[in-house]
Amino acid sequence: MLQKPQPLLLFLSILLTLHLVPLCHAEQDPQKEAIKSTQIDKIHQQISESLATPSRWFDNFFSDPRLDEEPAGTSLRLRGSIIAEEGNLRFKGEAKVWLRLPNLKQRFHLILSNEDDDPRDETLKDARINHELDEREETTLALQYTQERSTEFSLTHQIGLDLEDGLNPQIRSRIRYSIPIAQKSVLTLAQAVYWENKEGFGEESRIDYDLPFSDNILARATGRGLFSESSNGYEWLGMLQWLRSFNDKKALAVGSYVAGETRPQNHVTEYDIFIKYRQKIIKKWLFIELKPEIKWARDKDFKATGIFTLTFEVQFYD
Image 1 (spheres, one colour):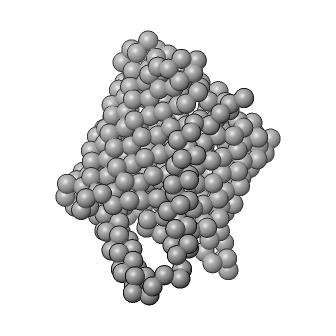
Image 2 (cartoon, rainbow, N blue to C red):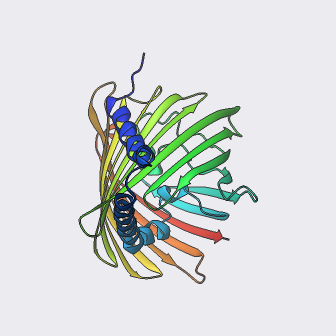
């Protein structure tokens, strides 16, 4: 029988405790409650300021997968990519629609997508040696309920179907907590648990540490881990990025990551370095993205492989 890593249970317990502590002291002295409220407001403001400049700007500009977990309204994203690798060209088209359902307190969204909506984001998925579950084309339909959404805390639940793979029902819940560190830096912890009919039970952890050097320069360290009934043990990824915005239309990300797994043995599966340049063109909702990168993958005996991706992206928001 597969066992989930103990850190998952500890992490969930800590988050639950932090979220429920205020409920356990409702009858305290009013003066103490006022002081506590002031402290909470200060923490909330500190997190808001830290995420707003420049963390939140970069997340929005680069369409970071973290934002997809907490949609605010109705939106549409279309992507078309041309990928050149080892002399071969291939095209990849993706679309995702978030439809906010009316008269439901803005908590429900209907999501239709053929993007990689697996609990792993694209970077972690690309780092897996076992691509059996990742290479199939999928179109998913999901209903998402946002139980709580604020700057420092969010809790979402999702139920979905894979329309091109025998429906394959899926259930997923995710919790996110942001903590201010020092003056402007932020530590963000996220934990998701899910079940898929074909893949079984699984969990995904993510830790991000954002350190802004100015309003237009940000350093980000990311750690991700995945464990499921069909994964290669515990699959992990560590990534460092340096992000720079030149103005509200142009930005650059330079980064590298290393990925690995613990089964059938504990080893590194891939190294990667990349540069991602992104710019708005013609209209504020039209983007072009250039991404050259070099990979060293275990399944290719760590031979250097150059990859170049050209992407056009269209975004519409209500």
